[in-house]
Amino acid sequence: MLLSNISLLYPYALAILPLFLVCQKLCGKRVKSLLFSNFELLKKLSSKKRNLLRVLNYLVIFFISLALASPVIKHSIAPKNIKGYDISLLLDASDSMYEDNRFKIAKKILKEFITKRQGDAISLTVFGDYAFVASPFTSNKESLKEIINYLKPGIAGDRATALYEALYLGSDIFKKSKAKKRVVILLTDGINTVKSVSLQDTIKKIKEERLKVYTISIGKEGDYNEKVLSNIASSTGGKFYTLSDPKELYKIYEEINKIEKSKISTKKVTLLEYLYAYPLIVALLFMLIFTFLSKKENLVLNLIILVALIFALLKPTINSSNKQSKSNINFAIALDIGLSMDGKDIYPSRLSFAKNRILTLLDSLDNQKVALLAFNKYAYLIAPYSNNYTNLKYQIKHIDPTHTKRNRSNLLSLLKALEDISPNLEKKELLLFSDFSQLKNVKSATKYAKEHNINIYSYIISSKDGTPILENSKVLKDESGNIKLFKAKSQDIKELSKVGIVTYYTLKSSDLDSFISKLSQSYKLEFTKKESEKELFYIPLLFAILLIFYRDIKRRRAWK
Figure 1 (cartoon, one colour):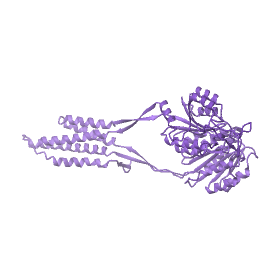
Figure 2 (spheres, one colour):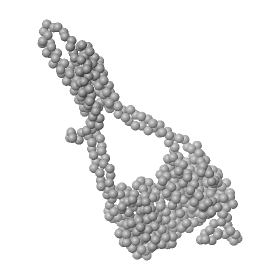
Figure 3 (cartoon, helix red, strand yellow):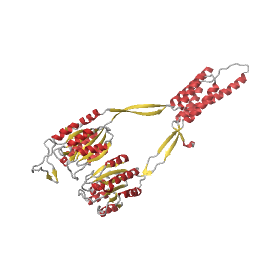
Figure 4 (tube, helix red, strand yellow):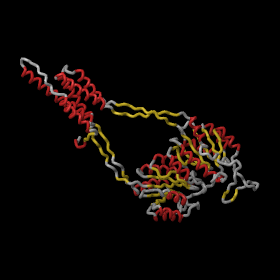
C-alpha cells in the first residue's frame, strides 16, 4: 500500500487535535498543591504517569480525528480510446428467406454481431413488399435483440422485395447522425421487384450521407443481382459478399466486425477504498491502555468512550425506505394498415388520424410499457413492450404500408401475435385502431380473446356513412358495379363488445382517457420500497470526542 495513493475525504476533521490543545490552554492549569512527607518522590512518579496519560490521550484524539477524516485509496481505471460507429442493418424478410433456414440463422448471427459492437449505435430496417424501420439508432443492445427475436419472414409482406426502398430508408435515418464512421450492412436473397424508389435515387442518397455499404447475398446465382450489389458496395468503399450456404454468414459478419473496429472513448472511473477502520483500531488500543492506567479515575466515562469506539468499528448503518407507487400496467397498441384505412372521410385519412391519435396517447403516458403492432393479412411486431416513447413515436410516424399488397385485416392473426409477445402476462390489454370495415375472422378472434384473457378496447376510425376507397387510382366497386362504401360493420362491433369496449373516434384530445381509466381500475397499484444504506460510524466517533473533551475539562476543574 503506497502512502502516495492515500488521500483524505474530510481533512478538516484533523483540526480536532489543535482544537483540543487550545481548549487545554483556555481551561487553565492544574495548580492544586498537596503536602506529603516524601513530596519530591511522589511528584516525580505522578508526573511520569500524568505525562504518559496525556500522550495516550493525544494519540486517541489524533487517531479518532484521522478516522473521521476518512482516509481512502483512489483506484483509477484508465479510459479506453474508442470511437463509436453508427451502423444500419438491413434484413430481407421476404418469404424466400425460409429456404435453408436462412432467416433463423441470420437472426442468430445478427444478435451476436450486435453484442460485439460495444459503443456503437445500431438501427434495424426490415424489408419485403415494403421496408420499415424496426428500430432507429439505439445503444440499447438488449432491446434491439429482443426486436429481432420477434421477426419472421413475411413480416413486411411476402410477395416482393423492396431492396432499393430498404437501402434508401436505411440511409435516410443517418440524416441526424453525428458519427464520423457510418456503415450500412445489407443482407438479401433476392432482386429488387418494387419500383417505389429508383436505384439512382438510392445511390444518390447513400453518397449524400457518406456511407460505406457492405452487401451480402444468399442463394444461388441468378437469385440476386450481383452487378448491382457489387457496384453499390465498391462505389462506397465497402465490400460485396456472396454465399450459397447461410451458415457461412458468421464468417462474413465476423470479417466486417474486424474491418470496422470501434475505438470507444470512455470516461475515467475512480473507485474508492475506505481505510477509516485502521486508525480507529489504533485509537481503540490506545484508549484501552489509557483506561487501564487511569484505573478508577473517570472509569465510567472511559468505558463509555470505549463502547462508542467499538460501536463505530462495527460500521453502523441506517436503511432508509422510500415507498414508491408503481403502476404495473402493460398494454399493446395495434394499428390496422388495410387498404380501407386510406379512406379520406376522416381528415387527412383514417390511417394518418389513427397515427396522430396514438402519438397523442403516448405523450400522455407515464412509464407504462407499450408494445406496438401493425396488422393486415399478417400481424407485424413494430416494437416490443417498452417505455421508450421516443422510439415508439418514431416507429409510428414511419409506418407506411402503401407499397404492400393489402388484403382484409386478419384480427385472429393479430391476437395470436399479441399472445406470442406477452407469454408472461396473465391479462393482456389491447388498444385496437381500425375502421372495422374489412376485419377478417372476428368471431374466432373473439373466442380466442376470451380463452387467452385478452381485453380489447376498440377505437373505430370511420364515419358512420362510410367512404369510397381508391386502389391504383380507381374507385373500388362491388360485384354489381356500384361504388363500394367502406364503413364499420355493426356485426363486428357487436362481436368485439363482448371482450371489451368499442367506441367511435371523436375530435377531442381526451377521447382515449376512458381507456387509460379502464386500465387503472383493472390493475392495482403496487408499492415498492426503495432502500438505501447510509453509514453512521462518524456519530459514535463524534460522541467519543465530546466525552473526551468533557472528561478533560472536568478533571482540570477538579484540580483548580
